[in-house]
Image (cartoon, rainbow, N blue to C red; front, side):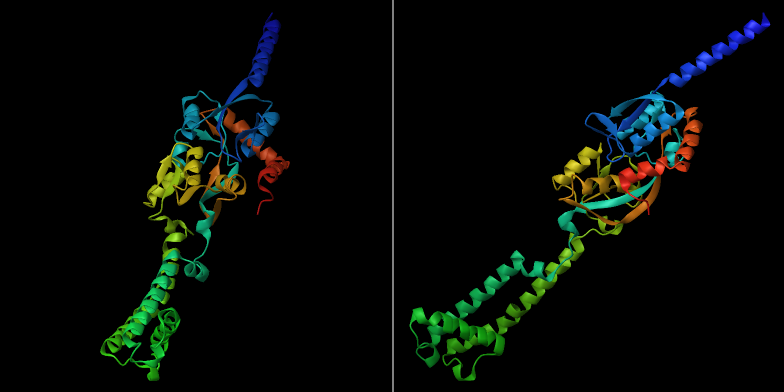
Length: 352
């Protein structure tokens, strides 16, 4: 009788263990290429491929729920309505108090994305082709031509050089004024009338302005471009229109640095604002932004500066989840047998 009871107990535990093994786990995620997204109706991305490898190693069945907001994904884990969450979830001290994490699955960090045209360096050619410089040149020519023709009006009866008809006088008069400004004029063509001499003095004095405006304009254009046109590091973000996702690690970093920014609910909203030229820079996870610049945003965006605030991604679980230890052991096994490296190379190439 005791023997039969022991056999029955063992069978009961075996059935329960089998049911536990076959239990379908609830996985929540959010769209963040290249870590998690849907392509041709299938779940894909680095994190989703890693999840599939874990499920095969641990004999899991799982279903994926894709939510709109990152906070919604983490909320499902905190509330226990999801067994785990996977995407590009940074392991932070604050989150560790609200949920459990696996060992790191990816090393990342923050980086800055800027419009492609903002990455150019100020150049002499750009300064020379500025609208303001063309206006200054036009004004200079108008002053010289106007001054030359005034001199023709005063001197045409007193100075042989200006003794020309109106339709023949405009260029010699302009040439006389130009030489006056550049070379100090011709001694043999010195004005002879009182008004002509007064005008000559005015033209010489004004030449100081005419000559200096070209140098000043070129210098100012290049200086303004250098100050306001480029974002090369975090220190260049002050005074710029910066965007990121609210309550993200990037948002927390910007707050600590006292850099003003616009917070958005999700990544699509940030990228839409960037496309609409509402932002000078986007600060967010380097792999996410790099993927965007290499695919959808390759014509409009570029990465600048190096990676800062290095962080690790992990798989999130409700606090006290019994799955954490099994996942950590399986992750170690995937690293040892080369499966992890194979998945990494598929999405990011060879690691440095």
